[in-house]
Length: 416
Ligand code: SAM
Image (cartoon, helix red, strand yellow):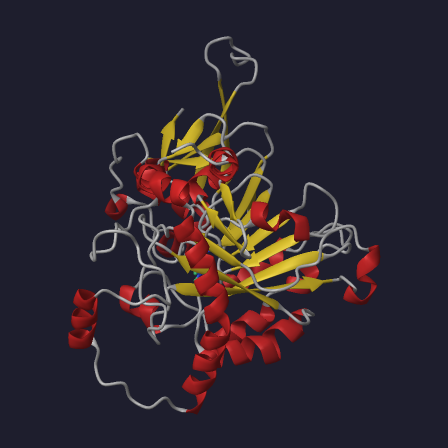
């Protein structure tokens, strides 16, 4: 099959825009890869969970079409008798029903993009053998950061000498040491650096910055100069929820603590687009809409959806399964932007919901958003971006959290 222009764009940019719907498919590996010159992300290490083709065989089935008789039988066996929803669950269900047509239309347009479906399995496999993603020997930064030794830990950061040789004329590497916790660490060079810590190597993208601290130190991120700040603020909080607790994936924070995030102080005076990842829990949604966003100065948020698909394009789960939706929501809103004077603004204001689709990586790892949102970001270009509760770094980004180096471990990368 001849690749379409959209497929060529996916290969070049990591984004495939789906015609006729408010939806796009993303390849996070390509998008994140733009931060590196000498390294590449290994697709099979990113797509580490097995979201292989659906078991029903044949083509992935569009939502809203009738399942095969076989599948019907299997479904009947597995489905417990539905119980009546309580009042809060009914509100959540109504919200789902409202989003459903948009999600179905996005998914159907993905299933119609035959060249993309053909391309997907290879994109996920990559052409390298799967590296040894041995997560058990990874450093646990959450634990290390909580120890009394934390202020004494240092990372040795190695840069390639741009002139090939150091002053002594012997090697092409320059080294410096930096405290690892509770400090801002920056890679100002236009080339990635390699950080050594406790016998492991971390790949640090060019022009990236991170601060590894607990929530109690988050105010250290506030820029000294009130005239600088961030134009894109992405927040993916460790919301309290059963799934994270069960998997012991990472520590969670009481929801009300988020009221203390210094979002206003981080926002650029010329405006910031704020993106907040939320779960599908109705109580949380209410807290976010009624208390959290107003306390940050964000009005009238727009809802986007991240719809998760397998390598054959089918959804990772039943769209209508109440407690396990195959999608997550993100709320987008502005800080320091007067939407009343929209015509005078030098960027496109987010209007109406959109759907982002991708094959998920590790548990809770979100797709990178800067490129797909670039036209909606206010302020100077390139924008200054920050991610709160980050687990990875990116060029042009400040990443803060108690483990922003988590996915920078060299086991997720290979040398170009
Ligand atoms: N956006 C990330 C990604 O795409 O991989 C996932 C973020 S995850 C939902 C939340 C993160 O917040 C975890 O890395 C967790 O360790 C971190 N976290 C939990 N409690 C924290 C605290 N008290 N201070 C700072 N970070 C915390």
